[in-house]
Picture: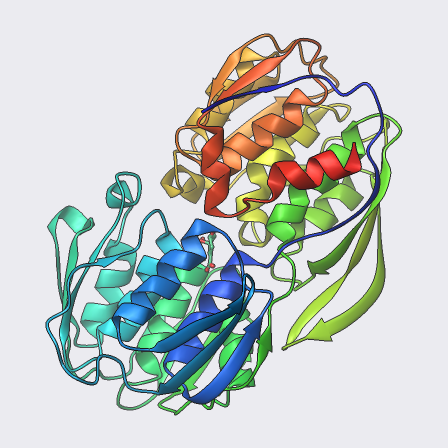
Length: 428
Ligand code: S3P
């Protein structure tokens, strides 16, 4: 679907509530499905990725019912596929999180399973989970480390795994395997990635401890407990950037998850001199949450984004590129080579597409460099490469481009944020 976006001739004003966090929604369904007991999950994501997770656990025999669009009941005895039936392939759709996290659960079951996915997911690297799982005793077949991935359920044993990659998906996979393995599992990473798994496993009673970049888990049983999912800061990011660059804007984004391992974009905005204020901060099912007031700012300054910053804002980098195009001076993004392994090669595709509308952006091996304060000329058709976050980032750029832009494949926004356009219209 081709979407056209025109320059906004007015400021963004008012108030919106940001829908559920994708990472937390995935985990809420997965962990409740392997926990014992009944629970209610409130404010579940309506994105297609989280529904892929949900459908897989239904296929695995878990009792999951929707009470309304965003509320579900889950009932489980903690055992998956208890009838031991031969399962059809489990379809993870477009979702890397579904694939990598459930691999850790499936590897330690008494049955075999196969995970499949769409064209984009089938190109993404799975060795990052196959290797450590194999060290734990898992038996997995995946040609060249890609889906389809056949998992032969095994008894696993704990390992100490110093990961070279800072990845919450790899970390979560190993912790979920460790939860049902023999002995303790220790995982460490070079920079701390999002810690939703650690927080939620702890909330559900797992024997888990974190110290800096290291997590230790012992085999444990989870007990079901109600979970309310906070709003997604990665979805809020598109509004934060739009508010900062659309002249005169001033609005409030309600119910945004503020977990410090996810909130790197707020630090970057501060470094750039932008105006975001947090109000009404509280906690919800173990996660920090609050409202964010965003105000337009025409004196943003470029900055360096690297190292520890990267896992804390990895998914926000495409829209941060749009923000940097409006900041004075240079913005340099380094150490973000894993962006090439997302739903698209987000370095190459972003640079190529944003250049078409006048952004001064250069590709580097592990990131990009932007010279800011450029007028975005627009007047081009941008390709989203079936990548939801590229499509939404281009929409934000279109709001300030001189001439109308087209976004090809805009329907991919449904992967994480079907409400995206409707919420923008609410502020216009
Ligand atoms: C996610 C972790 C990140 C992120 C993805 C969601 C998660 O991936 O990009 O959108 O929920 O664990 P990596 O672990 O590959 O960095």
